Amino acid sequence: MPLEDDLAALVLQESTLTLPAFTPDTAWQIGTALRDLAIARRHGIVIDVRRFGSPHQPLFYCALAGTTPDNARWIERKNNVVARFHKSSYHIGRLLEQSGLSFQARYGLPEESYAPHGGCFPIHVAGTGIVGAVAVSGLHQRDDHNLVVEALCLATGRDPAALRLPA
Image (tube, rainbow, N blue to C red; front, side, top):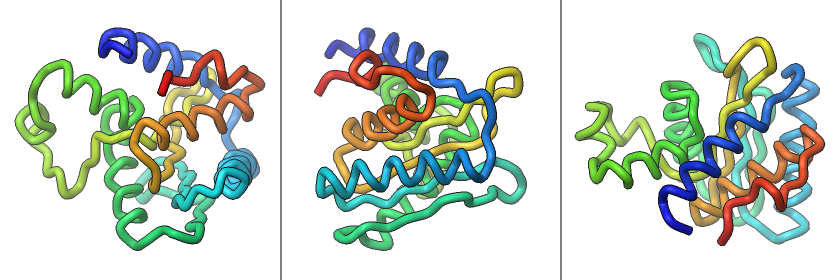
């Protein structure tokens, strides 16, 4: 898919996947939906759903077979991108690709703390704004992103096929 089409699809995803509320129960539902999808598809991933704040509040965490501590580190770095920019980590990565700049050159932030790679998506609550993020790590970045989008579609009653980025 051309970069411009991806960017338009990412904007649509981020504006469409809005929750009416976000509670620990909501985080649990999203996290268990991701876990169920991953187990059914035999994906070895780490799943993290959190509320932003100082400090961040972890509400759901799961590491499935086949993951390593490195996946947890990727989760942290992807979450830092979403917390800072209020866009999906994949969206920021695609914007960087469009600009031709590295993360360090564009934002002056250390890449060891930020990962502009697919797999972390902002949790947007209607009437409130971005309150947290849901992240996965363990697949190719586009697949990580699509898996999170699928879980958020299930949580919001949307058709995942309509919002999924093509392979």
